[in-house]
Amino acid sequence: MKALHFGAGNIGRGFIGKLLADAGIELTFADVSPALLDALNSRKGYDVHVVGEQATIEPVSNVNAVNSAGQEAINLIAEVDLVTTAVGPTVLEKIAPNVAKGLVLRHQQGNEKPLNIIACENMVRGTSQFKQHVFNALPEEEKAWVEAHIGFVDSAVDRIVPPAAAGTTDPLEVTVETFSEWIVDKTQFKGDLPQIAGMELTDNLMAFVERKLFTLNTGHAITAYLGQQAGHATIRDAILDEKVRLVVRGAMEESGEVLIRRYGFDPEKHFAYIEKILTRFENPYLHDDVERVGRQPLRKLSAGDRLIKPLLGTQEYRLPNDNLVRGIAAAMHYRSEQDPQAKELVELLDKVGPKAALAQISGLPEDGEVVAKAVALYESMH
Image 1 (cartoon, rainbow, N blue to C red):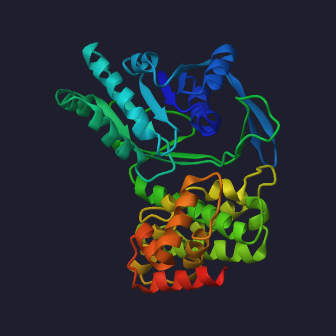
Image 2 (cartoon, rainbow, N blue to C red):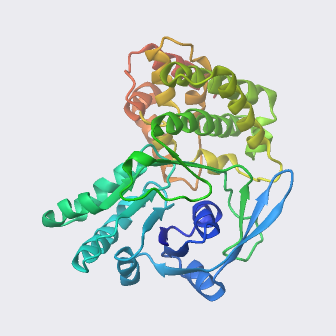
C-alpha cells in the first residue's frame, strides 16, 4: 500500500505519518519546507520522542518527501492508495488545486483503483470541507469520475504535539505524548476498509468529533486563556493552578452533559475521560506554551468551534454554562504579538466594543444573556 501525506510538520511526522509508516505503508511526505524535504530525503527516517511515565524513542524509517507544490506530488496522487493531510485548517484550500490536478491525472492514466483521502485536521468534518476546495478546483467534466472513485473520509484526531524543544537544531526531531486517537468515518470509504493499527473505524463519527472538540479542545483552550490571564507560561503551570483547574474542569463537565444528552454517552466513562484529559495537560514532559495553544482566537470563538458550540448545546438542553462563559470571556483577553488573529481581535474590540465584537465573532445574539454575562466577566478581568 502506498500513501502520500501532506504536511511534514510535527503532527504529520509525530502522529499520522508515524502510524502509516509503522503499518508498513510506503510513505511519502509532501511539504514546502526545503529543510524538511532535504532532511527526509537524505535520512529516509527520523526519531519520535514519546514522553510520559515511560519515555521512549521510536524510529520511523523508509520514508521520503516531495514538494507539495510540485509535479511530483501530482504524479503520486495518480498512483497512491491513500492521501492524508496534517497541514492546518487554513492550508487545506492551498493544497486543493494540486490534489485536483492529481485526480485528473489519475483519471487520464486509467487508474480505477479506489483512492481515499483523509484530512487529519483539528476541525469538524475537515475532509468534507477539503472536498469542497478540491471540487472547486476540478474541471466540471471530471467531477462525476472523482465522485465515483475517490473517497473523502472525515476523521477526528487527538494527540498533543508541542513544538520542538528550544535549542534543537534537528528539523526532524519531534516530541509527542503517549496518548493518541485517530477515528475515521467508515461509511465514507471507497473500496475495502484499510486495516491500520491506531486507526479506529466508526459509523458514528460526530459523537467522537464532538467528544474531542467539547473536551480536549474546549479544556485546552480555556486552560490557555485563563492561564495567560493568571500569568502562567505553560499549560502545565496553568492546569496546576487550582483556580484555573476548577473552571476548566467545570467547563468540560458542562460540555460533557451536552454530549451525554446528545449521544447517550455513559456519564461515568465520560467523566473518567475528562480526568484523563486533565492529567494529559499536566504531563511534565510536554512544554506547551499557553500562547501557542490559545492562538487563532477568532476561529476558536466562532460558532462551530470549541467554546461556542458546546455553549449552544447547553442552551439547547437548558443546562448550566457558567464555566464555559468564563472561558469565552478569557478568550476575549487573549493577546499575542505573533498571532495575526489576536491583533485582529484587539482591533475589533477597540472599534466596536466587547458586546458587538463577541456577537460578530460568535454569531451569538448581541442582546442575549450569554453575551451580557461574558462581557461583564471580560470587563471584570481587566
